[in-house]
Amino acid sequence: MCTSETFQALDTFEARSDDIVLASYPKCGSNWLLHIVSELIFAVSKIKYNYPEFPVLECGDPEKYQRMKQFSSPRILATHLHYDKLPGSIFENNAKILVLFRNPKDTAVSFFHFHNDVPDIPSYGSWDEFFRQFMKGQVSWGSYFDFAINWNKHIDDANVKFILYEDLKENLTSGVKQIAEFLGFSLTEEQIETISTRSTFQAMRAKSQETHGAVGRFLFRKGEVGDWKNLFRETQSQAMDEKFQECLAGTSLGAKLKY
Ligand code: A3P
Image (tube, rainbow, N blue to C red; front, top):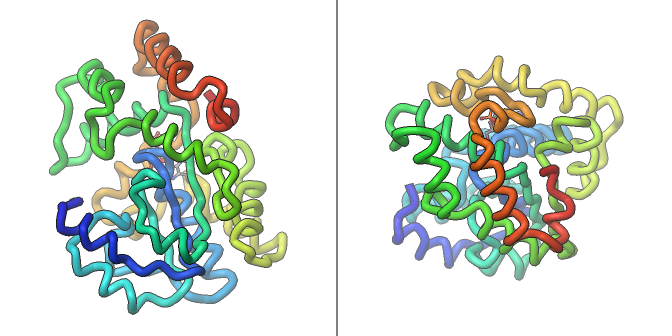
């Protein structure tokens, strides 16, 4: 899905100042955020998000960036890349960046199920095997912790806003409102409420076949906080706690994450 030719072409990608970048490690809820932002864009511009391209910026053929020049503004650019690996034009043009995080234990469990449930992508022999690889960062898009360390350096940047999956779960309306404010979109309370109602797990799962085709039911699996308790062994939980301390203790992101 991510060839070296596409990565080379990505360097030449021409961002616009009104592009909206959605950065997240896999399985942190990127499709959720994409849905919320596309609903917000529709509310303010009546432009329906209906991209003929796979939404992840770094995936696809190298010509996709040429085709993306035809897309109307504001474009949504979802990515699982580190800040340092994004094309420079994103920063030169001051595009806004939403960074979505989820606690690493639930992220790992969601990632494992995705690999093992979806046909046509590699599956793992067992949860224990996946856990070992996840902790070593030898999974698609690399280490959660490297991703977190990299993005943490930009947590206070002017055009960057961090959002937590757990906060969205706790108060979706407040989350949608904060995202709208960050993007500079002026919406009524009623519009925010309507978008929140359309963005719940149940609402999105009910439409998942329509919106995401066959992979939909795997993308909207459980949508809960704390599902890690169903898979993690005590020793695995301790190992991840230690890794968390080692990588994120004392950082702004470490203090923010609902861990
Ligand atoms: P689970 O596997 O724990 O259910 P991504 O979109 O980055 O692939 O992330 C997928 C995860 O986000 C899945 O987690 C999915 O259920 C969850 N998710 C998607 N939409 C959601 C929503 N509206 N509310 C809560 N969780 C959601």
